[in-house]
Amino acid sequence: MTGNEELFARAQRVIPGGVDSPVRAYGSVGGTPRFLTSAAGAYVTDADGRRYVDLVASWGPALLGHAHPEVVEAVVAAARRGLSFGAPTPAEAELAELIATRVPGVEKVRLVSTGTEATMTAIRLARGATGRDLLVKFAGHYHGHSDGLLAAAGSGLATFALPGSAGVPGAVAAQTLVVPYNDLGALEQAFAAHPGRIAAVITEAAAANMGVVPPAPGFTAALRDLAHREGALLISDEVLTGFRAAAGGYAQVLRDAGEPVAADLVTFGKVIGGGLPVAAVAGRADLMDLLAPLGPVYQAGTLSGNPVAVAAGLATLRLADDAVYAALASAADTLSGAVADALSAAGVPHVVQRAGTLFSVFFGATIEAGVPDYATAQRQDAAAYARFFHAMLDAGVSLPPSAFEAWFVTAAHDEDVLSRVIDALPGAARAAAAAA
Ligand SMILES: Cc1ncc(COP(=O)(O)O)c(C=O)c1O
Image 1 (cartoon, rainbow, N blue to C red):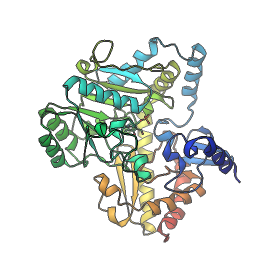
Image 2: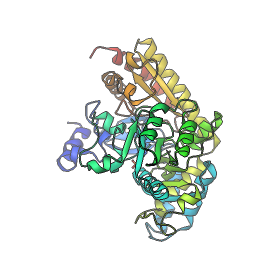
Image 3: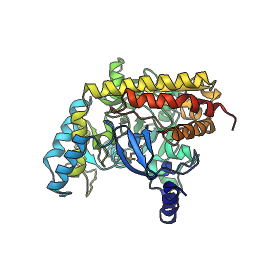
Image 4: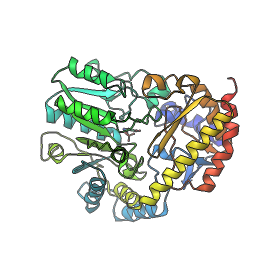
């Protein structure tokens, strides 16, 4: 048995499925998950001492590459000053200011610990502000694992082909209306069917949990206009895209494309914690001030704004300058182009989709015309992806262990790193092409 196999067997005896978050279990690609012991820059190392180029980046947070020395130093310095106070600290306002200055429409910010908490709080705020109960979400969008948000939620549920989750009361599920993404007509119908009852529409700023599926041009602005016309709020979930798709998140990508959309509420996570648990709900001051202690909408957290986590986030955002985003964009251009070339050369039908510096690759003849929504994403050839994934892994490249995830580059993915990935592509493309 390898070290990974031994560790997996041991973990399975005491941890359900051997993992603390389902997609890590390699369920859809098969094989033994790599148990990681360290990470630096663009590389991760497993329990057998094997090093891989990492294209998971902790599912987004590692914007600068793993264990960036200045971020680690900031964390160590903060830890020395104390691990947790349960009282306000100076750095929290600084992080909130940084977020507010970079993202259009954000006036106030409340720090929480996970993206799940952030979206949960945003929805409670929207309900508190409008006095309405219903929520609209898009099929294939993932907003964390709170009860009302697991219907057609992409990501881990898609990986395991689960329709939703057991344990969600029917009365709670009934408060969430699910409509197809990029389909304004379906959204109009939802509003028409429930007049005056919809509190908010929540959308990933660009969908990235069913593979990368950007909003069609004009869709996000039309969505906001429709929601506002109907007295509902727009919640833009930038937990994954925030400070990653571009410096100002996907809102900036839209603005640069001539479609400025300031959402009423925005959620963040991942990059703003730089690898430690920080997330945020943010938005218009009049809405945010409905939160306790100022307003009637309750939200709290023992570890919210934890000083060590905030230090990691602050250091990461301070270092995330134009050069970092240029490096990310260039790595995404190079890699997405090289993957497409290798797959075409091997005759593997595919489509690469982009959202700012994010991209993913869909395999299969049925999706070649493009993937606008979840129904199409589900028609991809997940078995071809599994073969491709394992060939890349064998060649020393760690991709997301699911066909429904974005590929994450970091500012540490320089030419040398990318050339290692590019060298592995032809063999993996041939593996994908081979019959199962
Ligand atoms: C768009 C989006 N929203 C919310 C979440 C939930 O965040 P967390 O895993 O920190 O609870 C995720 C996690 O992947 C996400 O991608």
